[in-house]
Each structure stands twice: as C-alpha cells, then as structure tokens.
Amino acid sequence: RLSTYGRRRKAAAGIPEDEGRSAGCCGNKFSKVSIGHSGIGLKFEEAHKAVKRGRGKMRKLFSILKDTLQSGQDAVLVSVVASSGSAPRGAGAHMLVTRKGRVRGTVGGGAVEHECIQRALGVLDSKNSHLEQFRLRPNQAADLGMVCGGDISVFFRYISSGDEQMIDLAIRAIRMFDQDRKCWLAMDLSKEGKGQMYLYEEGDLPKKVQVAVCAKARSEPQESPAKYYLEKLVQGSKV
Image (cartoon, rainbow, N blue to C red):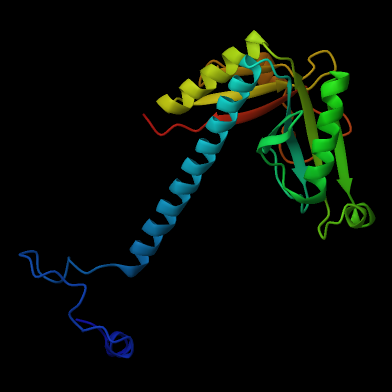
C-alpha cells in the first residue's frame, strides 16, 4: 500500500491511488510502475537516439565526400583532433569544405568555424594539409567574437578529386555504418603523413598506431602533437 505521503502526492497530482498497479494475477506487490526506472529508461532512449543521429550525420558526411571526389571536385576535411577548456566543439567534430564553402558538418559554428572555412579555402589553393592550433584565450576569444575560451587543434586535410584511396575509405566507412560494425578512424598528423586516413575494424588496429597515440591526444592540444589522431567511428551495438 502507499504511504500517507505517497497518497497525498498522488491526490495533489490528481492521480487515482490505484493507478500504476496491475489487475493481473501477479498482484499489486510486484506490478507497480517505477517512476524512477521509467525516467532512466527515457534517458537511455534519448542517449541512444543521440548516438544514432550522430552516426547518421557522419555517414552522410562520408557519402557526400565520396560523391564530391567522384564528381571531380577537390575538398578539404576539417577535423578537430584535440580540445580543452570551453571550446565550441570537442575532438571528433568534422566539416567538409569545397570551393562552394561548407557543404557538410560543423566544428562549432560562429567565428571559429568561419575562420576554419576561410583557411580551408586557402588549403584548396595550396594543397597543403596541415595542423593548426586555435588558442582561445580571453583576448583572442573576444577578437573572434566568442564569449568562451578554450583551445582546439584542427587538422586541414586536402583531398584531391578522384583520390581513389579516400573514395575507397568513404565507401568502407558507409558500409561499416550500415552494417553496424565497430571500427576506428586513424589520421596521421605528422608532417610526412599529411593527414593520411585509415579505417580499421575492431581488433585490427595496428600496434604502431596504438602506441603513437598520446593519452592526451583527444583531450588537449600539445606543443608536440601525437603522431596519430584516433577516433571510434562506429561504436557498434551488435554482439
């Protein structure tokens, strides 16, 4: 039975005292609806939907990248590979830029994103993939029209039209999303690597990539950045 306090709460809310109990053969004792558990279930469902939305956005980005390269257009993939403080977006944010401007994705919007788009357009001319750091200290943040500080490291990866390696990677990534197969996206951040990207299924990640990824690589920019940026592209829910 409900306590006096429970009855008062239900009465105040206009809920009949017996609502939430089952009339089945199990009896009331084991058939009460747990409002707390329902809340947890709703939070889990919302989190699951958020993950699916994020996966859908990344799948779409790879689909557009594939179509862009196959149509004879160059592109720049702008990726946040490290962040700290109150940065607009954390590591794992991606944006695709062509000569038309931003075509998909975001690295946080606002002045920083505008600056990244302008620099990406420059990369289309120079064809020079490189890493840049935006240190958004109070004065610098104000200069960029931002109210928050924080640092972000952004890699600008130039991709020429018809790049077969990147077209193949995009096709494989789309397949991984569709089949819900766990996989990792790795990016070589060294000057020699020039942002070369690799896709590895769960369990196939090379040891050299694992040991070259600094523990801080995904959380804060560094003076000497890790050689590789590593991102869990598809979490996978199948066992």
